[in-house]
Length: 440
Image (tube, rainbow, N blue to C red; front, side):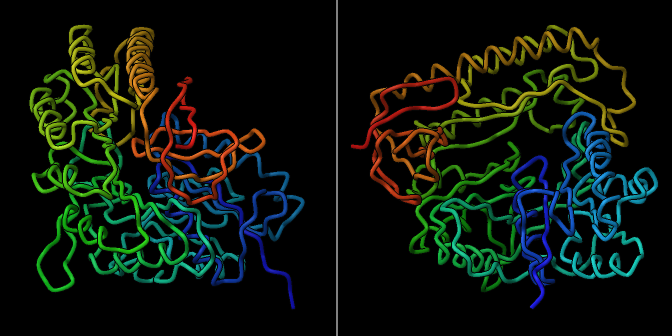
């Protein structure tokens, strides 16, 4: 019996890409591949790319350049580019890097086995369509192998918001929600394989509007309440949300559903109404703040995370100070912040840029404030009892590491627990990016 072929996948960017990479591996598993941790012994290399970060495409081309020697040593090695850069660049990737054998967009990766077969025959394979068939339906099975206790599950893809800085509507397409029954079946399958925490994913996950099992349309809250009934599933999270889609039933679920964890990633991007309008965000700083009030009224201990872009075209120091004021009022437990960088094809791409040194200084000041808030919130956890789901062994002998209900990383020394256990832990120390505790 021939040895199985080996597949190496490098994943860039968001949690949805992590999920997509898992499904790509499963698809190629049906074609006789097993995954490997190194490209050196791979028969096929896939780069699952993200177009959000600065110079994303150039970084992919640079990464591909590193494989030239490997391709020369192993002419039968197949190299593919998947994900959002693949969708945006298409055939240009093959033109600039002839060593690439296949390019597949995020809506067509269920076709990978056929594309690999075509590439094995010596032809280039390109698929950046938005096919009518449901890729998730084409990839029904998740296998039977034991899973880590936490898993991602995509329930919604695409975006109809068309923020002026964002390529997602062009690379992922329009907002589409998976039928509720298919999501529930996949969730049950994950739980049967050892998963105890599921994070529901979507570009605008709270815009979920999937077909219900008995007709009608389900909201994300409807889906969460049905997942609440799944025996063995102990924790539910979701990301990423848009303020405009935070409906009353979802806010209420945060206060009423015990399995829904008290953590919410709710990007605002700016605290300046002028900049928000130029970004086409369709909300104001005031409406965002009032929304945070309502969410905290439902779940007072909820940890809020956010996204910020500084140096957006036309942003003044006054606009930036409006953002800083919003951050001061919200008090974020975590946040992701970036200096604006142009994405070709987006409405903001043609606008004059803020001075780079000024934008860098604003990012430094914003991150300093966010770090201060994060550390204050983590310090406030010392002495409190939290619930930790243990996910892996730590670096030290006998140490175990997991996540609290607030998504804080927590390490416990001399922990007599197993991966997947959920235990009460009293927090005794706070460090830069994690908490230390003892079992209760």
